[in-house]
Image (cartoon, rainbow over all chains, first blue to last red; front, side, top):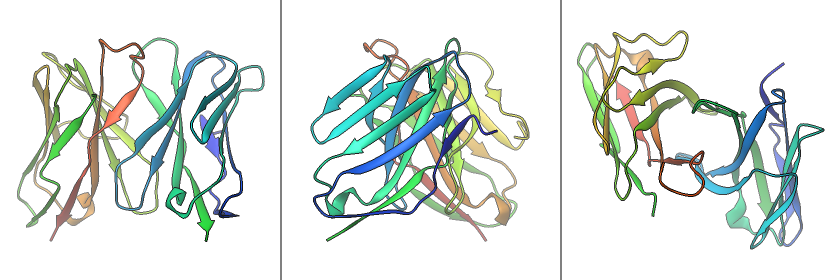
Amino acid sequence: QKEVEQNSGPLSVPEGAIASLNCTYSDRVSQSFFWYRQYSGKSPELIMSIYSNGDKEDGRFTAQLNKASQYVSLLIRDSQPSDSATYLCAVKRAGGFKTIFGAGTRLFVKA
Amino acid sequence: GAVVSQHPSWVICKSGTSVKIECRSLDFQATTMFWYRQFPKQSLMLMATSNEGSKATYEQGVEKDKFLINHASLTLSTLTVTSAHPEDSSFYICSARDELAGETDTQYFGPGTRLTVL
C-alpha cells in the first residue's frame, strides 16, 4: 500500500462545475496535510494546508480532512480552464521533516 | 513571502561532466531544504534532505557520491550531479521550509531545473 494514494485521473469537469479531488494516507499519526497544484513543466505551488479535522476554505478552494478515515479532499468550486493541472496531495508525519507526496490527479476543465 | 529560487532554470551538458544547481530561499532562512527529482509524467521523488552545517540525509537508492549536496548557509543549498549520464536527465526541484513562519511544515518549491545530458 502506498503511503499517499490518489486517483491518477484524468478527472474531467465542465467549466463552472465543482471538481472533487481525493486522497487517502496510510500513516495514522500524520499531522499535516497539503494540496499542491502543478502545471505541466512547472514546479508545484501550494494551494492549501490543513491540520485539523473538518473543512478549510480559501476562495474557490475547500480542503476537507477526516483523520479517522485517513482521508483528505480538495473541492474546487466554479472550475476554470486555468485550473487544469495535476493536483498533488502531500502528508507529513508527526516528527521529522519528511513530507510524502501522492502521484497526483490530473484535472481537465473543459471550456 | 516564502520565495525560493533555483539556478539555472535549464542546463544541457555532455555525458561525464558535472552540473551544479543552486537553491536559494530569498526572503527567509531555511536550515532544512529538500531536493526532488521528477521524470516525465511521474510524481516527485525525494532525493535528499539538506541540512545547514551538516551532512545531507539521502533517501534509499540515491547515490550520495553522485549527487553531492552542500548547505553552507541558511539561504543556499547546492546539488551537484557528478559524472552526469543521459539517465540523469530529469527535472530537479528544491524546496524549503520557512521555520519562523506560523506553519513550519509547509514546503515552498523553487521553479525547478531541467537537466538534459547528451
